[in-house]
Length: 287
Image (cartoon, rainbow, N blue to C red; front, side, top):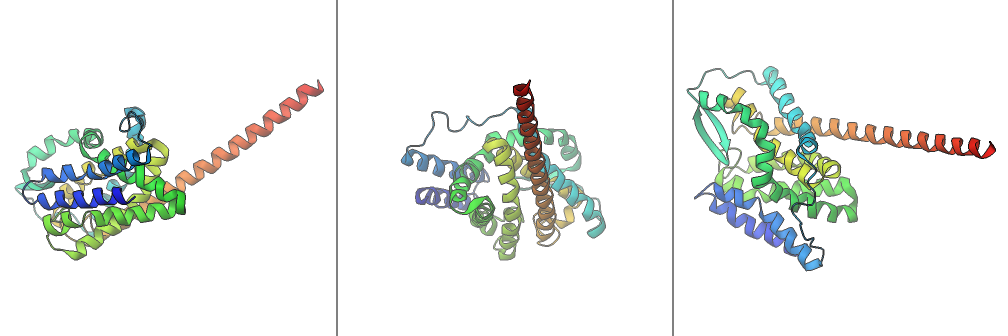
């Protein structure tokens, strides 16, 4: 895994530092985990002929992987109405996020809202698949073979958050406050439960499913700032702060519990079907 980490962190951190000159370096950064994974797979002799496209399961199936993102954003927006309160003033421009925060007239933002439905697909194709091929497609199963899926998800979550260090501290990624150590800490607390959701998406829908979920998170979380723009950069009440980490933990627990219950119900159903088939075979033999 040394080559993977050297590429993801060495080249990735270089690109993040270059993002002070152009935000599009952040997009390039998101492909460094995939590059590291490809190099490792090539070295191990496990590189497939079509390593980036073999896990595609169709749009209808992959969009199902975005359900946790929709639940998280909706929960965060709803609860903030009671905990934070609506924006006390009506700004002439709305801060939106496209690699870096930018100000845009309100009518432009609201007119573009229908495009948010395409965000998981667009983001997955352009950027988030690059991260997920590395984090979930390579590192996660590699660690899971040694320590199991739970601990592997936790480790990947911490690594994933720390990987964003230059972007957060130098560029002000997600918080608009460079050299904010508490912002980095809050982001790691965010990626920790987020990692478990992406493990769920990976196990159920493959790498592309994790990429669609990641794309949905990046594309839809900004809706929170349309309702609560005064929380942007707030380490406590922003959706990228401690509050967002708390609602994300609730979301993660809900989806993992649901997945566990569905798995148990499926196991019981398969067991009953097996017993019924054996009973039918015995009756047929007696007949």
